[in-house]
Length: 132
Image 1 (cartoon, rainbow, N blue to C red):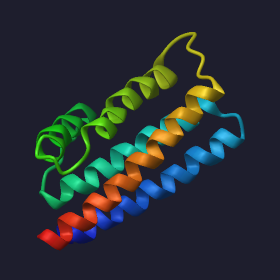
Image 2: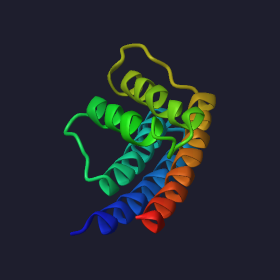
Image 3: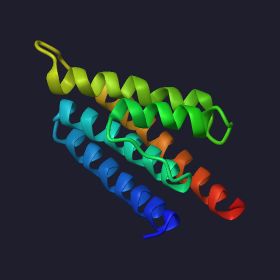
Image 4: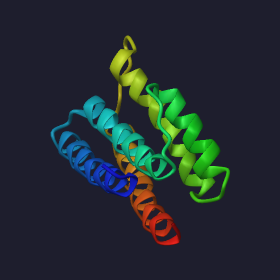
């Protein structure tokens, strides 16, 4: 499988995960929605890294590579990239924290950020593919 095919696959996967986040929000499953929003951002980050033939087995590694090779090189806007780290923290709180309450507002904000992130990643991917 080539890097472009992999990147496109990952973007499509990220869009599917966004729909899961939306569905879970509608069903008042706020913690699960936050989880899915994060994974949509994470997967779209990995899509862009695939174009550079980079990846990591750890979430922190993917985020570090994304920041180093995609954000610092000005391919992806810094202000949108910040959503990824914040989403990771909230997802970890939702999944592993004791007595953590994820509100509808938290889940809604996370979903909007994820939509922006995935849309931007898809746009950046197209530019990266065209520019080679």
